[in-house]
Length: 315
Image 1 (cartoon, rainbow, N blue to C red):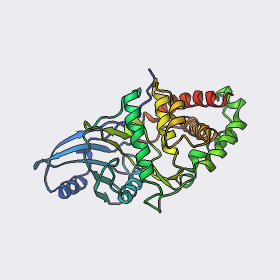
Image 2 (cartoon, helix red, strand yellow; image 1 turned 135 degrees about the vertical axis):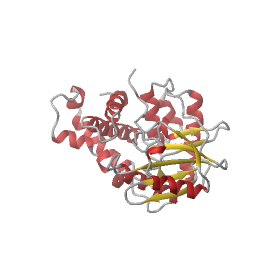
Image 3 (cartoon, helix red, strand yellow; image 1 turned 90 degrees about the horizontal axis):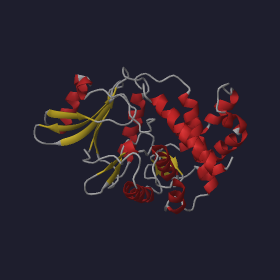
Image 4 (spheres, helix red, strand yellow; image 1 turned 180 degrees about the vertical axis):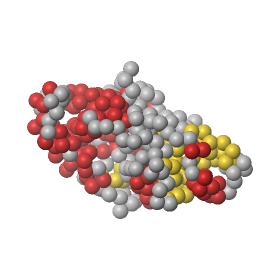
């Protein structure tokens, strides 16, 4: 079966420079005696659940330029977001941040939880999408006024059909070639429709969600936090239902969810099509350093999202 869950290759905690590990122990006030690496996501950096000699628990994520030249900047963006987020039941607490210009690290609350099942189950959907609606309401208007607008944060993600149209590959899917003008119109519509003042995660997938034994739902990995329309995160989350092969009807969910029920269905379709285009375009480029699995994932996901776009447009 094609891989539809984000799984990369991570460095071990012990591979972090001594200066970063020393910072961790200073912040925690005790020596680390256990570091359990965690999978999920595509960062090549370390991500580990820590236990110290005095029983303190924490979660650390860290990356340096040697692993990938872009990843420290992504961690730096997450550190800014976590520093600005208010304390809520749906977000982890930030204990401390580290940035020496090369390595960037975040020391966070350790969440004892599991990721939603993949394919998503009805129970997980009910829990996670319910919590997402509450989180979006709590972050309206944005508590971080300096958060970048979506169109500024990820402009290439909302213009990939233009990139493809400028030099249409010979081996592109014939359906894309036939409907490229319509896809360009949907892309332009998405860039306008997604504007808003809600602090938005913009990367909600199963690997960025934890469900605790007490049914607390926590959304992690806030590197792409931005300001957007209140329905955007729910649509992005629903993409993961579709690509996972879940039996839950994503269209029915979007039609009734508190965040998307009032959204124009054509705006929702436009965002789905724009994201599909971004993944089509990126999947055709060489894999970045330290991220050997990302292009296959993007190809698999783009195929699923194109099929969803076809169903929603009727093209």
